[in-house]
Image (cartoon, rainbow, N blue to C red; front, side, top):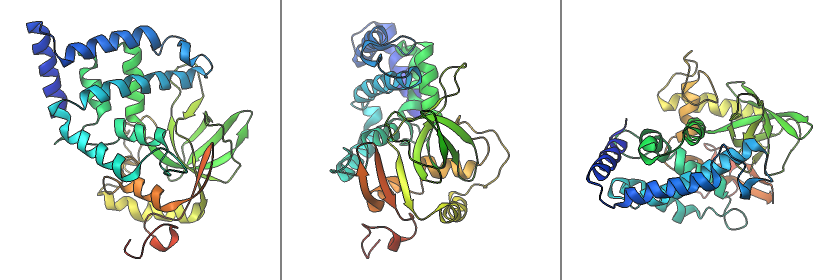
Length: 304
């Protein structure tokens, strides 16, 4: 358990022991209310039009969003609030034409990828540590765990099967058959920058492209693979350590895991999206260029 989660857990225990109304009491009431209304194991009224795999993650994202808003007001989460607040002010993540950062991309980063505190915790990891104290159900805990283990990745499009898209990640070569709720099915050989969430049910093979896809129109697979090969060592980790990782998306390749989840700096991937923006449709955003080749990025200045 991380330092921040331990402090939150201590406060929860103390508040429950003293039976005093606190912000944590409010959080527990909020959890009960949301569980009753949109629990992920149910068919939520507002999510009945969605595929069950997508509905589970939407319900979980909603729960985490409510809790993150309340938790970020606590002194223990001051650093987190500053990190996310500054990124939101700088990149204005409301989607094109206002910003190339899609809201679904930004919020999943804010909840599950943005590290804070001495142990580099996230909102997701804190909720996994204190969730039982808040009364989170096993269903919500399982879905939060999958989302916390997820990350963005660079995928090659391997064709459309019915209403599903087949994606294969560069470097790891892991393949997925995916629902794309945004509605963009694309075509074979495209490269996508996206967050792929695994099937939340044991009897399903459908992964979920949870964020609106970023289609990387140039350069191609060879150049992107070369970029990953030369950038992964900068994480300080080995490219091919044969160990089972914790992401739930890829086994092995810890350098790839760290690069794609955290980048080389706090706003590394935000900055890439911002500088690489080329065009958009309602269901896809087009990017061009490589993060470490400034002249390839349409919006890079001479100083970048």
